[in-house]
Length: 621
Image 1: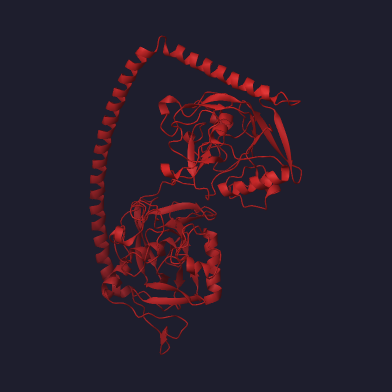
Image 2: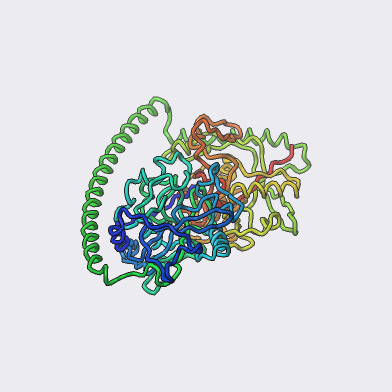
């Protein structure tokens, strides 16, 4: 799913000691060495590491992974809850992957590359969950004896800054693959310039999983102050090939992501612990005076950034005021034009015209329903609106369907909110159909499929499956057909909205508290299906509880020149739709009110585990 998160704006900070050590080693390339090959020690003493030293670890069959040394030091990190920077001590030096883990490095140990972008073994591996990373880490440990892990946020930002104070450690275009230059795909690692410590792709290409926490004085880890550590969630850093420049900054954080989530924009890199407690030991006495000077410079930079931010805010407010005035003038001109047009068109009051339109729509629906009923008369007991059909699944698990008769309705949003994406238009459903009385529950899913981790806050048997990919749904449908003989499918967008409205023309006056679990009343968790009131056709939870997948690919312009009868919008790359996902409808337990409306529509990557499933079944003809 194309998930749109709101991220905390970080302040410009710096890695104090790392910067000082870089100044001492500018222009020096440390001697490359391979731990475990006799080059790590001389005369029994651990070598003193320098910035840009290289450590090479052999994974298997000659495939290597290179690490760069990051000395002990300090990093100033922005704490959103405190609205200030906090100094975090990196008490021990560490090695960090020179690049993100590549598909070749992944395949040699795991052998199950699930990356979306392929064709070059040096592309970063992506499509991996946080839990997948832990399995890879365990294999690296067992094969090499190296104590590797994901970096903490403090380690990641410290290594990313590499002794600099800017958001991007230099010119972003020369150091990162992002939205402005990636061509909507990943690129081989190391093809852009490294940072000052010789580390590549810290920004862009793929976002990187981190451990939650910061290194404290005692070496333990603590969560971001004022930010709860949520079970089963972690943090992403660095931005990706699809990110804008705002997200490709050393301070930018993607928080609260499910550890079971995967995307073609998410990968990882490893850190490796120092081989001994003496390796890279921090010389506090030597840098104390220099540290104070750097802190004073940080304060000056902060004041300068505050002045720049104030200027940007003032300019933005002026621009917003000008835009608001322009929009107001345009709206006034539009209203004046429309009033003049309506004056010539209408021969009666607007309320009377609306009443006539409702009567016409009602009569059209009656004609279509009568025609469908005529075709159904060959059945002994033809279905009527609200009738129930019960299907028994393996293990005597039942699934109930409700009948939706043929009819016509105005699909889309009300006139005052209508945009290209939700423009109101006439749609005719020429054949009645059965639709699931509820969303598919965890119990119904398990009766067909193998046990599945629902990843919902409340994965009980009667709660909806709320973390499914579109592709998961297709496998479930195929098994459902083979075991029941019923030609079930996901609903089309038109079928879904028609069943949701249940004969009502209301678009905004929906009593959500009575009919839906959403952000205002869910307690941030899904709930058993059927607890809220059903709609007029006896169908539960069409809004809220879980997003629901539809058949079609999302088209932002699909409602323009749409077919009137039984529309099914095809996937057409030639019209610029290739960057959109499949349609999801109805909102879920975390959604705000404006997502839980009959006409609201969004798209999601079909590989994204973000929505539930409700089935439709046509009556045999």
